[in-house]
Length: 358
Image 1: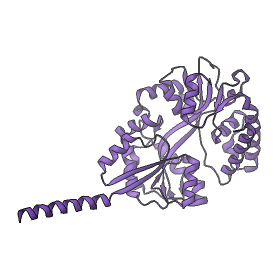
Image 2: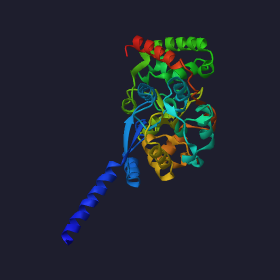
Image 3: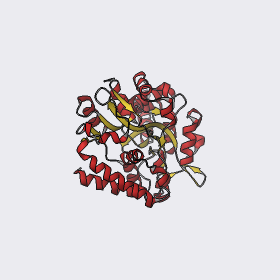
Image 4: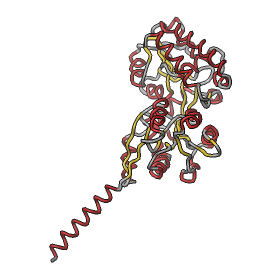
């Protein structure tokens, strides 16, 4: 009888374990490379044993494409940049409003929080809150290219065959600013914006002979800079910060017209099935001890109060080496992209790629 009771108890325990496993929720995150480091995933799953995290790495264009193709299904949390939400939501209806009562927004840097809310509010509903922020600008080896300070310097003949850039919208915008235009103001007049894009395309096609290679990811850019194949490039600041730790001559340079500033966000896909798990992840990665782990992985600054101080020491030193207070005041935050602009920019990039053989 006693043996029978023991067996029954073991079976019951197994059934409970199986039931618990079967009820485990999957949190499907669509995010940038390095935005879900294994250390944090393991820590989160240990604290939340009923949630399993699955990560798909992507970029802004792919995030929109994936969610557009499914009507907002397939993922429970996405991390588009702040300027890629408003128009995408109006055109494709791929997100759902946030319940801000479930997010500890008190830890967020107020200016960044309010800025993202303003940019992503539709019919009184907020569709995103900030996570990490940083800038796009220039990187140079100051021992080899001490005078690089403008987007246009990537095309300076003195550096022929020694510079690089990525053929994405950032270089279109940066080149426009360097040519004395304000592309963000032109968003309200798409005919004018097309004229700017045409001028930029002509400039970047002429610049082809200066380019050693067009980088596609941080790894190939880093390899070219560390080897000395190139002496300057358009870059994300986080890539430059990582290289600064290996070579103090490699520094991030805010362009004289202003570094382009982005804020990556948290947003809920419209047909996501694990909202509560998504809110748990958001609050989890905003905790100070987890911010430090995240920023060590991304190289970006968390959109929390004291985010700079939570950077690892080497990256904090790199930021201080790159930016003055005036540079911070001169930041150009990406403006909301109106419907139609991405198609215009895409066609311009294709024109440049065709002419450069990329």
